[in-house]
Image (cartoon, rainbow, N blue to C red; front, side):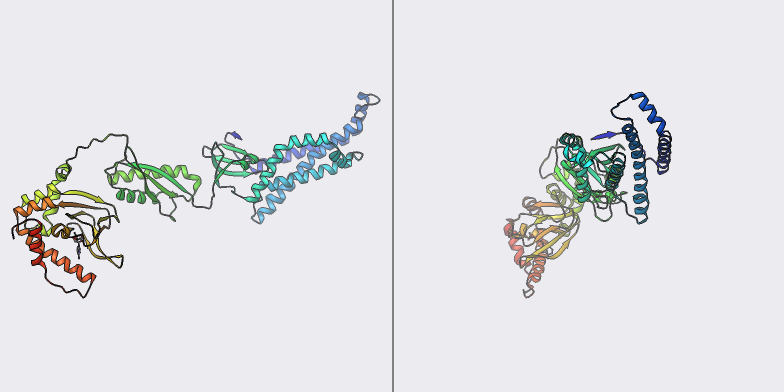
Length: 489
Ligand code: CMP
């Protein structure tokens, strides 16, 4: 494998000038040699004595063969250019370099052999090739690599696992770059540091090659992380929106943002995005990281860095811990069933409330489970669903300030429905003990609660079975709740 510095492509005009100069020089040399052939021969005979070996004629023929060889080579190059460079291009076909090279070799060999038999009529070429074992061995050894490359090149052209313009990564050293040429000897790739790497075809045939075709929408992964306090649902949304608008990110596939790991320092994520032009993935990765940084800034999200977080938690005392007891008291006082409570009583409930966050689609309550707490929706939305023939059916959507789970809490019966978070939802959980303390100080609350529960029960009964009678069961409920909470009847 050869690695060389950046090379600039020689222009066609430069090549033409070089070609004309070489042709002129070769023609001049041939003309001079033929003109002075007799004198050169005489000079050679004079210098080499009576019985020279090789003879002067042989030397003259060898030089002629050399000159004809040069002219034949130039002729074949010109033919190659006219045939593949002009005629093929006119038909908009780009002939592979390997085909052009094979053409050059075959045409040149034929011309050379014609010239050879013409200049050395006594030498039997066929016999030379077939009878000379030593010649065969030497040729075989000398051409071992060349032939290996040649046949590997042919198989590359036949299989076409990649083409000019594709990005490939080759071998254990993981050379990555854009394919510029596949010749009879090597694959030429230009790396992203603008170096040219030549990989011999026979090596490439042995190594694994990762191909990212030019006309395919190839994907990349970029990693980032957040603090544990940052919401995954929000992070995923923010990053997805930031990345999908970045330049060179394909609009055909929406980027995927997902959690890779719950790491030591924070939540580790990956964003998978697809590129329009894969060859520019370094720039696009960088742009994606930049967009994530700005999006984090705007959304108040935080990158995690090596930290040790020491958390001192007093379970249940959520309001104090978070320092936003005011917001929780305010939320609870706006809930209709708690309207009869005094400010102090609502404060007591707020102190005892425990906050929980649920991801979109997570189940907060499962029908049939036992339960001894109720919930108030603090942020987000939930759906109340009953199971009908084994399939969930939505009976209500509850928003911020609504409550649920009171039926099992107040009656001791199993949960009557599934409650599922529709988006990232924060709920405040109020347990049996806290509720009992409030009932002890404000027994009137039981009455208003029994109305609501009766109403919901009725709603559920009519949703599940429309023939069920809608009876007012609140009186029966009132005594059941009082019994369950050990209150005087
Ligand atoms: P619980 O039975 O403890 O658990 C499921 C909860 O879903 C239930 O309490 C109610 O709070 C709630 N629920 C049941 N039916 C309805 C309804 N029709 N409208 C609103 N909420 C309901």
